Length: 358
Ligand code: NAD
Ligand code: GLY
Image (cartoon, rainbow, N blue to C red; front, side, top):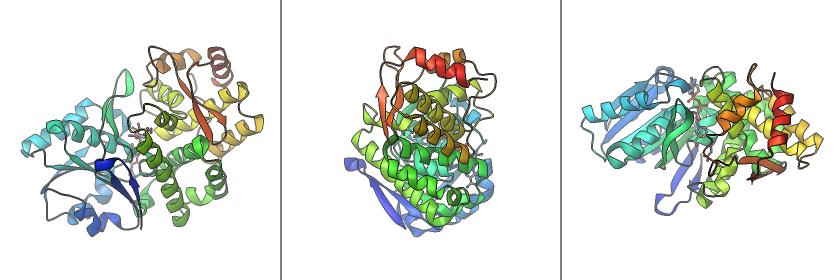
């Protein structure tokens, strides 16, 4: 097992990466109080809930099983958690446990940030995407019909348990969505890691343990370092949104159905590379390299059919990175070096959308 820390002073917490963690004593020992609210969804409950519960018999545990899917990441679903916590008369010493992918993690984190003004929460991420990205860093929240992740809070977990074994049951399409975020780390800050991903992509897609373990560890290391430098995204953390401005527009356009978050990020990274290419920052071969690694990972590299340039601009106008109505984008100066572009090149954006929309 490997352990990394997210260094945030008195709120420093460990990210454990290894096998069999959901059955481990380490999991039990991370919980301070007696009361536990374990939240998962229908799909993950059928696979892992009994195992996790049997590891936690010494606690007073209540369970909430949410409906599955990004379109349930909303205030109504959040209310199921509050209602159960209040019905059980759980105090603010309760620990909320998120067992699931990024959707469950983000909702539970926000419930923990706000229930009785804040409780502990622990992440047991069960998708590759949530293990390499969403469980780390304390961004929590739900979607609003007018924008993704628009209601939320920063609230760090007390620990993250990345159990590689649970990825065994993850469908191939979800693996690809997680690999999109792994590719993101290479593109935004580590070209040597990007080359490593290119060399090991088949192993990653085939769930080969040592490749997965390295990808998860390296991704978490990059994210932990960035979060430690800029917890609340006043600067460098925005780089973690490479591909997300375009990706969130795609997800919102599709009503959070039919396209996975990681798939939208994959298309978004390709669009960011194309814009960076036309701006003269990336060479043609860098752009081709970005498209090709996303294609090899089975990610869509063009926007969904029927989405227009105008659809993009409308949704991008509500992005959280925008300041005073000014569109800000994460682009690439070179492969492995992302930066924030404050003067979004509207004419170039339009060219790229015109060329890619179909
Ligand atoms: P998800 O949570 O919807 O999980 C994907 C699917 O896999 C679901 O159907 C789920 O039930 C299923 N599943 C989960 N674990 C499984 C397992 N072990 N075996 C079989 N099936 C399993 O999606 P996701 O990709 O994990 O997360 C996407 C969400 O994460 C988005 O809402 C996105 O906004 C959010 N996100 C948040 C952050 C952050 O910093 N907070 C970062 C990136 C993404
Ligand atoms: N996924 C973006 C962030 O955590 O900041």
